[in-house]
Image (cartoon, rainbow, N blue to C red; front, side):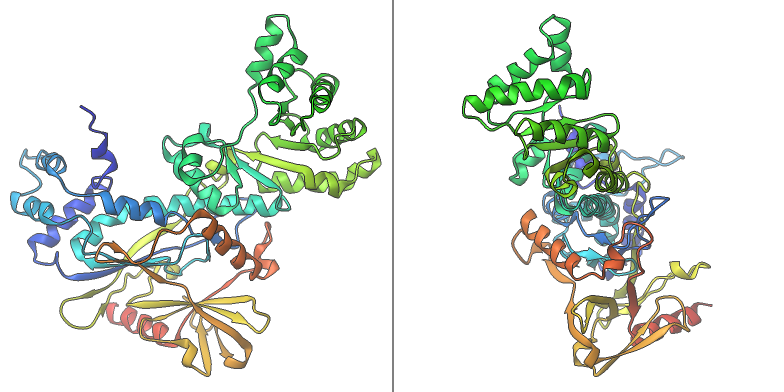
Length: 511
């Protein structure tokens, strides 16, 4: 019998979340309302370069998981079978009965920044409120969904930006961690990929899957004595209007491109328009220039040239820079060539090469019994790891140029839109703060929206296109310095005066 659902359902969590839930249950704390904040501490750092922003992703998959996950008979039996070192059961029947009586995460409320939006460190991307035990159990899965997809969406966005917004295709499925390929494809499409080679996820999300052909096709025809040209003709015969040929199996410039041109001319005479070629090895910038020259001379000036093989934002940036410096000396217009390039990005996208994990965390910030919220703080010898306590609101402040100037984290009952001036505190350094007058602000926008109320969706399901529009709108309002791929300008994330004072007061009380 297939038991895979046990691993994919509500038991898709770290074991200590369940042992903590039972502890809360036994101490009568399980039903107390708790608030947990999800945020990340730093941008992805890729070594020689780092991000100056992130793209929020993963929320929809998390909500889908929450809606379907329940403690059924099989899940309860699995927990009943767990034993400690002394051979005694770890989970009592009383606690297991309580779990089974819960209708999944029906008691959970969730506010979040929508997917596709530009986000920054120390800003709550999601705020979870609900029964303490259930909110605790949710932690690992929430982090799994939001950390990974935000990481991949960010990488995809950086690659898209470095490509001069050329077509970007996700080729990462074969190098992804198992079924994480589907989450990576979704995140890549949110972050900047136009299409993906991942057939199933593309169809699920409503995008046509994309691809060319394998080197093995040319190898088979060559091994059997027919040769590369026969292989190209066979492909063109079956896909005459979608003919994009991989030209580097034998010799790119002396065999692949000439044979591709021969096939393209045959297609043209039959009334078809070939798509182009793909380069998957060698000096891609040089080969792109030379291939473009040959295609241009044959009358295929607008044929697409797809580049692939270990690409990322820095490699693509170097390719475009080299083309701008060298193409004209070969009689090729560099900007026209850059405009006809497409990129297939695989390993370095799907693994977020350089920084393979987002430093996202989920921390308790407040509890409530029957009265108001009681703020909670976690201290650290590293000031940056001391959390911002209490119930919160999150705002984006736009300056007089209508550029995003700062993200402003305040207490939940504050509305900065009503203030004549705002004091923006650095999250950790007392001496750094700034007063911003209302005359210098064009807009103050709330970022968090309610997405779940008692486990039920508040709004409909947004589309990937909705998320892409949000991403582009936010990028357009970022300062160009923040968008730089290398040494980006630091974006301001600030605390309100009231939240800063609460943080200092609680920190002092704990010492």
